[in-house]
Image (cartoon, rainbow, N blue to C red; front, side, top):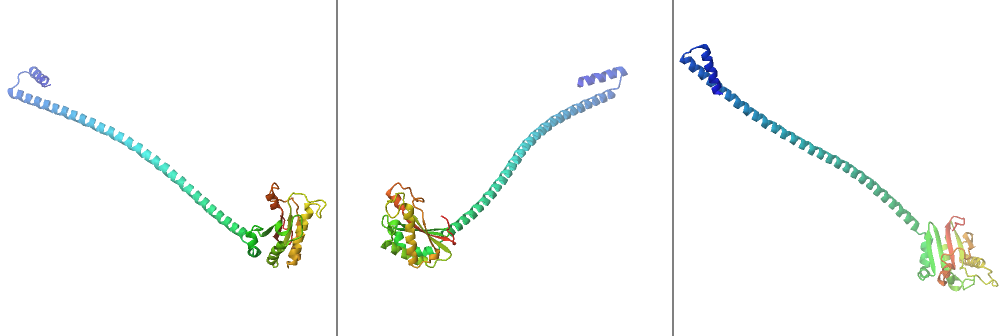
Length: 274
């Protein structure tokens, strides 16, 4: 580059004619200065280009970092959104479970109250249970009460001999205890129900069928209760024969269960139904 500049100056001198030594030196000095300035500018330009390149690389790196941060931000936002949705769903589920639990607690309380009401025993029941404690413990008499309907279930053998409708001594004693508890009954009807097994009676005997036998036994118990002081206006008798068994008539034990007298106390003055 310097050689070219010097050549140019020589050419200038040749074309203009002879010059003084001073002018020549000055020209050479100016040429050298220009050459140095050119080199400096070229160096500065190269440095600037290098700096620009570095800055461009930094910008590219920052862009990559920005994209990575944007991706992480989007992922975090998606997770937060999913977490918020899941939390709302869990809160709703918890509210539903709480409401269901409250409903179940309320239902349980109502069922408990209903059960207590059903199991609440009347004064007549308590009196009978106390007076017949021995017979109940021996399995001769069963006592139950549900929805205000009390039933005294007496095995036939405690009251009657086989095929008979006459109350025996043991039966009279038991009926006397029952009558004592029923004397003060008000607002209820007392229905004596006779039941038999399915073994036919002797057609030539006093009871042509189990219908007559069951009714005769029920009537005998009614008379015993009346004689013991129970108000006859609340007494009634019914015979069901073998047609309302509480067990299958397939064994001596089950037939014994079906041969029974039930004394039913029901609300009101009607029959109360079965």
